Every structure is written in structure tokens, then in C-alpha cells.
Image 1 (cartoon, chains in turn green, red):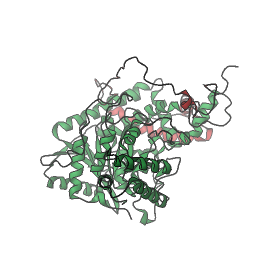
Image 2: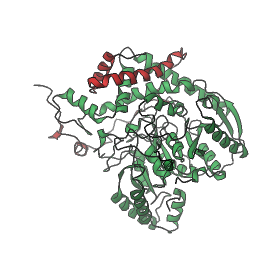
Image 3: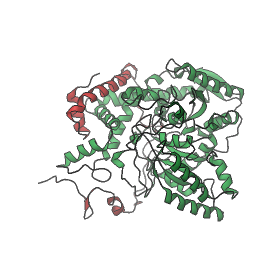
Image 4: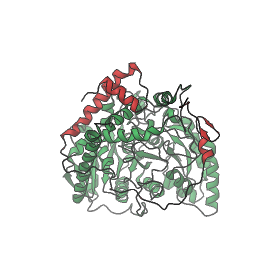
Length: 485
Length: 95
């Protein structure tokens, strides 16, 4: 049962072969048995899940089902869930129980999906390894046999590990600089970061508002399409949400790929990429050629500046967003503050972890008097150059393909002492967020028994095409079906 | 680009984060390394380039000036660290 996709489970529920209550109980039991090894969940919502499953079974019996009615899944603990604590991986929000739902949460609720719990993540989504969570690191289900524990990537490492370990068939995630694609790659699953503005950010705890985007994680492209069908759409509660029709993302999955024009950005096949990784990615591209696609080299000349621009823009926006955590209205407050300043400074010193504080300080510095033009404004100008590179590339080709990460899952603790080394994990994913275009990571092979991800980048609002390209690849490969030992 | 101890102390005050004396050296190194990474931006020619704030250059929408939200003061105050008579309590500001 745990190996089945959302699409398969949905069909079994539809045919009455299993009830949502049975299915939900099976997955809950599996999480309780297995998750001690992975720590992919922060909160399990067993009672609520079983009540929702019962309601879903009644909906199905009454003939009011959607494809999601009764299907179990999990939310990254960054999406506010009414009445269920939402921690964002931080001590600051350890006991925060939101009095409202994120729009994404509400959408899944309306579709009748059954949320089993909230998944682990880097604190405030700042990280590439899910090691900075206040609730402990998540372990990658892959590579455990080697005696060393590996990271699942981050920041959505809990969602990725849970899907890879078959604890849930699907989970929500968010991506500010690679936080869906890099963990999807390192855990051997399929993930999609939509176009900026496609999925509502309302109730999704903000990190860097001009980059943050909610998205999908599951084992198959088809399941990602089913998720995006629920998540995408205009939301008046999000001022950057885009008012544009949402297609049925499952409708075009079976379109043939003949004539698809693929571009390989030469900057993403540089010496930063290990030869064994490159071989896997090039083999995947060859599969696309067999499916009728054509391939050419393209250039993103400013991509090399993406990490630098990101580490100004993201911390600057984070420093503003995270100023709301002041100990006054919700979240953590330090003991016995002697005055207001003491309350603010100790609450924030004690409530935030090291990496979050580091980024707030960098962001505050970049925005402070005398530095704003040199850092923030300069970075925003470079951001436009990076966007222009993508616009130019998509005049020549339909999609871009590259590795998702420079190397497979690394050993826990290997990069925690050097923030800059950790930042370079996102070298192939960050430019996409700066440009705001959609991108996926699709399982495309293994190096030393660890999964390798193929990144597929598309033009604005081309999610249907990306999902189509990923789905067709998954009809002729089985990398996405491989199960960790 | 190096960042001085004095800069770190100043930024910590602006960010309202208490930084203890023994943390300053580590921050000096880490923030210095991050700013070194960021300094690559200086090499980019950005003359006549408009800064990009929203990838689709969307602007803030205006809505009708109508009340759409209901008052949920009790729900919001229920999760606050300290309240009294519908007010949020913080340490005394005015003697």
C-alpha cells in the first residue's frame, strides 16, 4: 500500500477497494514505526487525520469526491494549519498554534485530502540540509546502509524524506533558492517549484517574499500534477499572486515530446559538477533525445552571479520579515525581560538559531544606511540581468536541463560549520528563483547508491509542459520507483 | 570586504538581537565570508539596468475600501505571551 502513488490510491478509494480510514491508519502506523530513523515529522496529527478520513469516506459515499478525497499527505511545517501547531522548524514558534489556515492548507482541506502531520525543515526554511531545525536533523532514507547518516537536502528535507521513505505519498514544500528541488534530488523523488505567484503565499510563513514559492513533492510527475491542480490559483489574500487561469495539469501529461527543444546551459555543466554526476544527467538527456527531443547548448552568462545576488536579496527580505518575531504578540518570549529592548533582543537571541541570526544580521547590514545602494539595489539589478538570460534562452528552446545539485547527498555535519560551502549546494537552483520561472527535479540515476536529480526549467507558467516532460521520462525510466533499503 | 566588531555590534542593535561578547569573533568570520561571496556583484556591469523587485513586474493591486475581515481579537490574543483587558502586555515603557 505504501508504495502506491496518489493517483493509484485515489482510484482504489474510488472503486471502494479500501476506505480512507483504513488507508490513513496504515500510513499513520507506518510513520510511527519508521520515522524514528528519519525524524521527518515534527508533529503527527493522528486524531484529526482519522476524523478527516471518516469525513472523506462519507463524502465519497455521498458521491461528492475529488481525486484527493481521502488521500493521505503531509504539509511542510511552514504552512499555517488552523488549530495545529506550526513551528517553521524554530524554537520561536515551538508552541505557535495558528488561528487560521494558509490558502494552500484550505485548498487541500476543501479537496478532502487527509493531512497526517507537519514535516521537518531547516529553521525558517534557511538551509540546504534540514540540519538547522530546532527539532533535530532529518536523515535521508538513502545511504543508511553505509553506516553514515546523510542529509536529505533542505529546506524541505522532512517532506522529501517522508515521501522517499514511503511514509506519505505526497507532501507540500516551499522553494526560495532550491528548497524543493535540491531535497527532491537528494532523496530520489519528484518535486516542482511553480512560477512565482502561481501558488498563494498567504499563511505560508515568509522567508524572502519576492522569492518564496509553495510547491509539490511526490514520487511521480503525475502526482505532482494532481497536487498542483489543488494548489495553484489566484488568491486576493496574497498581493503578489497572479490572476491567470489554471489548466488541468494532468490533461497534458501524455502529450508526445517529439520536437521538444532542450537547452543545456553550459554554465551548469562546469567543473563544479563531478564527472559521475554529469554522466547521469547526460544519460537522462539522451533518453529525451530517444523520445524525439532535440538538444543544443545555451548560455546563461550571468548565472554565476546568482548566489551573490541571492545572499543579499534573501537575507535583506528575511531581516524585514522576521522583525515580526518580537515576543509581543505570539511565539516565544524570554523570561523576565527587564525592559522592552531587553525583551526584543533576548527573545530573538534565544528564539532564533545560529543560521537564522546570521542571515538577519547580513540582511540588516545590507539594508543599513550607506549600504543599501551598494548591496540591495545592486543585487536587484543583477537579478534583472539573470532574468534576461532566461528570457533570451527561452527564445531558442522550450526547456532547460541541468543537474539539480552539484553532488549527491552529503554526510550530516559535513558542511554545518561553513555557511558559504553550504550555500554553494544551491548553485544550480538559485537563478531560477531570482528569475521567478518554474522548475522541477526528476530522479535520473544514482551515483554510489545515492539518487541524482535532473533539473528541468521552463518559461513562466509552463508548469504543464514541465510535468509533461517529467511524466514522459518516467514512462521510459524507473529511477523514481526505486525504494531505499 | 571585512566587517568590523563595531559594525557587528551596531547591526545587532538594529536587528534587535543580543550578541554576546564571545560570539562576535565567529560572526566576524562568518559574515565576512558571506560578504566576500556577495562582493562578486561588484564585477557586474549594471549601468542602465532597472532593479527587479517582482519577477513579473506586477504592481500591488488595490481593492475596494470595504470591510472584509471580521474581528478575531480573542483568537489572536489567545496565543499571545501576555495580555490583559484585550491589550498586549510588554515591559513598562513609560515610568
